[in-house]
Structure formats: C-alpha cells, structure tokens
Amino acid sequence: LKKKLNKLNFLFEKDKFLAFVSIKRALTFLIVSIFLVYSYLSIPIFYDSSKLTNHIKNQLSKNLNIDFNLSDDFSYNLFPKPNLRFQEIKFLNKDKKFAFINEMKVYISLNNLFKSNNIKIKNVILNKVNFDLNKENYNFFVELLNYNFSNFKFEIKNSNIFYRNIENEVLFINKINHLKYYYNFRNEINTLVAKNEIFNIPYTVELKN
Image 1: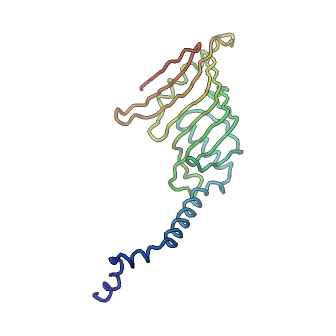
Image 2: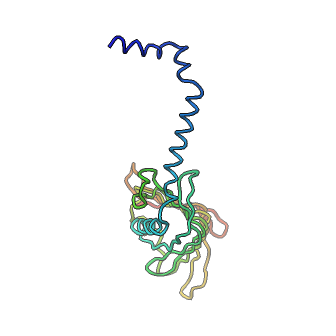
Image 3: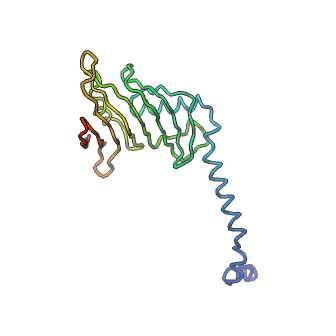
C-alpha cells in the first residue's frame, strides 16, 4: 500500500502536477468533450422524419387538444437550444381550420435522444400567427388553461387575432406581441400572460385557472 501511495505523491507536488495537467492534455480533453456533446445533440438529424413528425403531433394534440397540420419538411437546430423548426402550418380546432402559422419552434428535452419516440417537448413557440375568432371558437385562449402546462411552456409572438361577426366580417384586429402559458408551481395553477395591442392601444392580460 505504501509503495502504491508513493506513486501518487507527484499529484501533491506543484511542478509535477502542472506537468501532468498540461495544456495539450487539457485541450485534447476539451475537444473530445465538445465532439461527444455535439454528436449526442445531433442524433435527431438521423431520425425518420415522418415518425418524428407524428410523434410531435401526438404530443401537441395530447397536451393542447389541437390538431397541427405539420409537414415532414422541417429543420433541426442546435442553437440556442435544440429545436425543430416547422414553417407554414395550419391547425384545426374542432375539425375546422382556425389559424395559419408562419413558423413554429418546438424545443425538445436533452434527455434520452437515442430514439425519436423518447423525445419530450419542453417549449413551443409560435411566430407570426393569424387567428380567426368567431362565435364558435371565441373562448379558445381561455380553454387552453384547462390543459397541463407543468411540463412545457406555450408561447405566441408577433401575431394577430381577427375577430369576426356572424357574416364572417372582421370587426377588429387584436395584435399579440407576446403571449405565454405556463404553470405556476408556487400557486399550483396554470397562468396566461399576454402583451397585446388593440386600436394601437397596448394592454396586458393575465388569466389564472
């Protein structure tokens, strides 16, 4: 035991320790670590696109009760966080076309990326959406508070809500600058916070379920 411990004495001698932890070794370790992390995060690139799309659609439908018409043509981005980017999407509410989305980003969990059916949604951001509200779906945004946001956040940015009358004419337009659904763990309630504009007048809405 004494002989073995003597071999480790160099770790406590400054000069020998610095020689052991050289710049070359540190640089090699850093490069290998970056390569391994990048390789792991790049795994979704090799997924079957149709299976991954269906998996994402099923999760969105389960969590939000919205039927997203997603295309298999999407891009996968690593920065700033791993996300799937879909463009020109329509989604249905109660089997009727309700909104047109210019862009949707689905941020995914970094846990267990080895299989496409293990992917978990962490955050969903819709950008440049045109909503059509009428007497049949006027309470769409309030009803969303009934769903579970404890596992992910749902955000809408730079969008418009077209309020229509019975004749389907536009009465007025509400601009959404930033709208976010999230779960308040302290109070254990779903919360909606929205910064809007109507007739060029800014206002804020906060709803809690």
